[in-house]
Image 1 (cartoon, chains in turn red, green):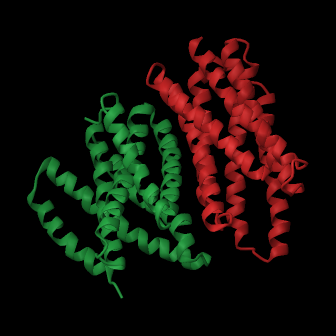
Image 2: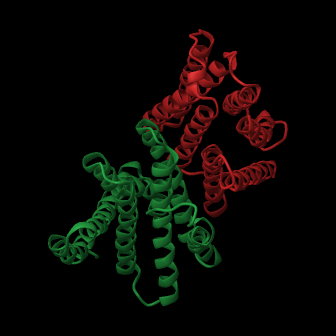
Image 3: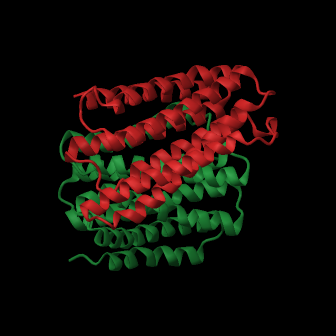
Length: 220
Length: 209
């Protein structure tokens, strides 16, 4: 029950984001709003694919390639959005902290893979291991890139306040994603006591925050 | 037992002869149609191979493997054209759409040979639905590639991301058209609706020529 509410709420919020972004893309600043529409759209397509598999076949997809591709696309569009709104030319200073984002995401990728490895060996489905290794590596690199870019721009003193707020929303998005993935390793169950749902509800709120953040950044 | 390669040869032969006789735009368009049909045939082999090696059943393969393979195979002729010939934007976009048309045409022929030609209404919906879906996928990639990004590396990364999006859209379409009744109808109508919306509202804003 809580799973359906969570999914439906997230899909509804993302659809609002998609349609608002498309509407604004045709009014002004088309490229930025199109990237936001593509970001929300690719996420909602991944969610819908997962949901339709559950509804029509009563099971999650055996190979999660399709929804993973959709979520990779989502991170790529988010990176491009960040790049479009706050171009890297404004932040050329070399600092150490942004690289921690990369190190963190690659370390987390190793952690998730080792966790998954234990699980697949127990199930005797070793053929899944290589696919999952590549999958974790891609997620690690993409999330690392997002964390790196967001922290780098946040540390730049020349960046405008509105651009800064978009960077914060992106950073929160990344951290919530890591929260979701980490709790899903240790907690299972379809009750509100599962912290997975808390993180997912917060992620839904964060999706909504992209609209004012992009609007402010574009206006500035 | 259907030998789809034989059907492909029968369809490709006149097209190939016409390509040899035609010039300029007509030759290019027909070449892309043929490339789309070839991509469809090859993707059937690749999908069947992957489904067999991963132990996936036919239904699951239709929405887990086929969309990935089909969209990648469909993009290869255009990618080759872009990399080798460095074409004008207009030619590349029409190439993308013609490849999608060729792909959809051959996919519909595969459907006809497998399920027969008795149910006209279903074939009508299926024909238009599949055609519209492939054209919509081609359009999304073309719009993104040629209107959103101006730097080559952004076009490459953005093109990959758009390919991922259309793969998911294709997979959802396959889930719907694999069902019966209302779900099948809804699935087939979604890409047609997107095409209608494009023609009604966005055609003047996004011009392909």
